[in-house]
Image 1 (cartoon, rainbow, N blue to C red):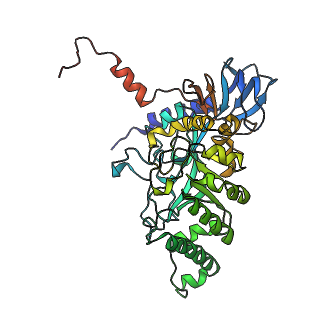
Image 2: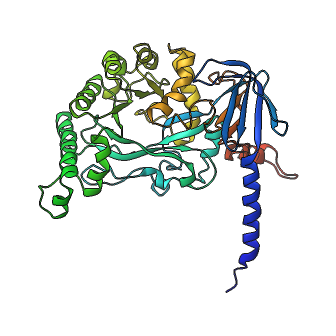
Image 3: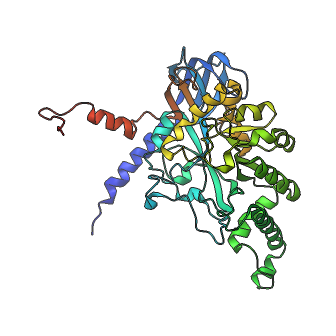
Length: 432
């Protein structure tokens, strides 16, 4: 059977050459108000990009003669936004099980070995709308509500395969201590015992791997692969995102962290403002939103839209996400992170802190600040030109660059709008 390979190889060579030329292009964004985040804003600033990286940022940057110039006069220029709690590329249609790759079965409600990013669909139609709204990087998290649901990764929304998108993996272990049922136990106190047992068993497994392989150890709370995946956590090398909404649960997470030398990040944190001083003293970051003040469950009775601002004023590092735990941030609304940040500002957070909370703060917390989160030489060229304040509802992302490549293709929503904006000749909308 002849598959006529030669023409395909030739086409691939042309595409590869063209892609190389695109990545080697030098682009200068000039004349805009530039917000590096890592330093003070720059009026009439220039951002120079080459080979997918930022090479210079400033007010007096020399622009090479062969550079493509983009006039950003009157516009705002920021790093690409980071949404730090998504299932983008993992969930296409929430109610259709066959389109979900976000949850592992695990064993006894523990799935620490689950590497969720390996199931990301890089052709997801939901990536383009997020990117068009200025989101250039996302954290993909496992879901399922188990005691430990798996590991998270940070991705750049570049074209290619899932492996091309990964900036760092894993960046954190994902767990929860607010649902006894999800952890497979009967009460909160038992949940805490189970988590402590997992930590203790991981240490024992780490010290006695040979004995484990020879079946000369006691039974452990988790499988070999799950215990192995937990080792960086108990050694303090990999943080654990702990979903905890109630002030009491957050305090329990801090105690477990302190007792075991584990780095924790609070996820959700509806009542975190009640224990802001403890979080600040422990230097524990919080991932939280600002879109909702209506309790979605008993665990969020103390939820407040002022949460992010109060935490930041207390000295807590805040990462703004969609309202975790309330179920109102579907995958197709990953782009709403800028509305979350705008609401945080409306409810007391400073504008500068809000911008940092969706750019540099998550990059620092997840150990990728040398790649994303700010406009500095050597960083990935994830850059957005906005028509105005990105947190104003009327502003839009006019041009978006991810790793130096501009993405302007119409997303599915725009294609459908164009398709049905006008009817073909002789066609009419059917009457009911």
